[in-house]
Image (cartoon, rainbow, N blue to C red; front, side):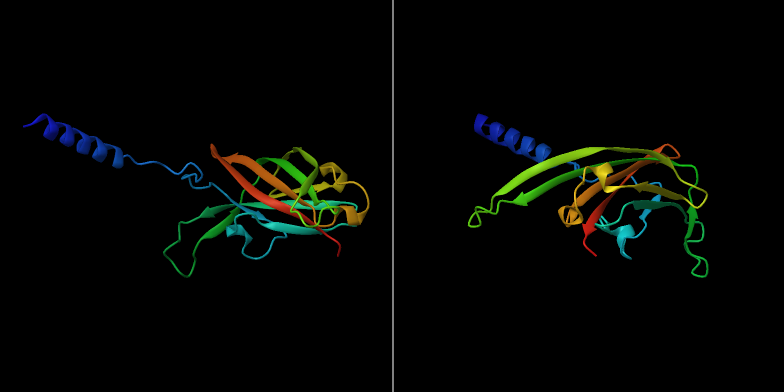
Length: 183
């Protein structure tokens, strides 16, 4: 064999090895969630939606954030008369965190798509435990998120919420959103 043929063969072999490497998706976790975390007050399809949103009135003095933790018993999956059971997961600690970035378009420069950031706020609301019905419920005010002032100043704000915990040694995280309206 000529040295050119050997070089070509080695390059082709190296190319095949590199092409056969499997690269995992860094953005998608392949683990199955141990619980269904249903965001209470979100629209009907929210248990399968990416980030369910719950709208609250901007004039409310207090808001109640809630999720329901359910364990899915698939024992009767193939029996259409019984199906999957949703069993409340009681006594599960859940840590709730939030983040908010408030932005506004500059009124003085309407010809430009200029965005001025007013403020950013994030933190932990605490750790809460699910009750016998699997419900985690938190009562907060807009001031707890850094949203102060009159109701029109809060209108159209969105707060991202992160609900995190572990069930039977497997961690879970559910994202949701609090939207403020002027209803």
